[in-house]
Length: 139
Image (tube, rainbow, N blue to C red; front, side, top):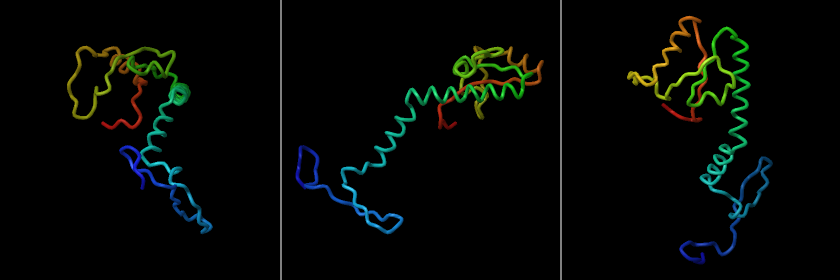
């Protein structure tokens, strides 16, 4: 290895033999092989692109419209924090925080009572609440 600054560089690209399904040996130059970390970062960057975000919202809007057609008598409410992206014409709105009602979180916010949601659900028998969370978020 020859030293360039603080990092070592191979004098020539090394070939890594890999067996294919027909037992033929294929040689790859080490400079063409990406690390797992680099591939993961590239995939995450691609998944978080503006196109993919907007495409995901569009698919979710179509899904919500399909569910709304299956249950036309159930009022559709959009959470003002993230739900308005997914339903352009809700019957009403509400304001829930992502941790409201989670297991072990029994505190009740007096600033987000959403009393109208409870009244509407009692009167109609049910409500559909549209909200979103980040993909892969664990609680």
